[in-house]
Length: 158
Image 1 (tube, rainbow, N blue to C red):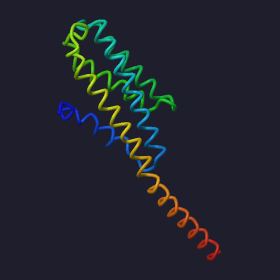
Image 2 (cartoon, helix red, strand yellow; image 1 turned 90 degrees about the vertical axis):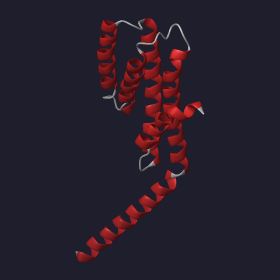
Image 3 (cartoon, rainbow, N blue to C red; image 1 turned 120 degrees about the vertical axis):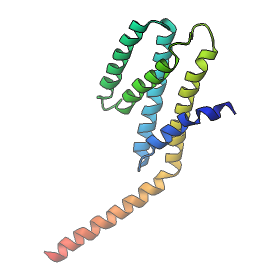
Image 4 (cartoon, rainbow, N blue to C red; image 1 turned 30 degrees about the horizontal axis):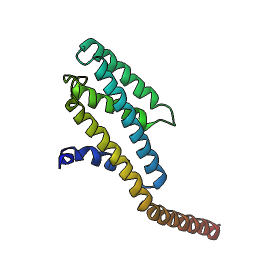
């Protein structure tokens, strides 16, 4: 199918967002999806307003890079800011020679990239809810047992 050529964009969030516990995986996946959607909307808007102006593109490049990095310094946004900037760069630099205002075909590649990235992030969220809670509980049990063993050992030694 047509989506096969864009499968990398769905696999990438799965690789980058799977973390050892459910909360961290959900948070990182949600931030990736939100950053991708926001970065994609801003990128498509920039391409629509000025598709062929190199000085404007360069100015936008610096502004978006600064904004993405600055947003990533806030704890509530964090990874979403980096993803925002990265998505903007991928979409704009990949499509800025095409005239988005004239044809829907020029929108096809960026929309597939955005859609598949968000799909990968959502897949990661669902899998982390279904698979990782068992792993987190097992890990917690081992840590409790280790802490209890160390506490008992300290009591016996002293």
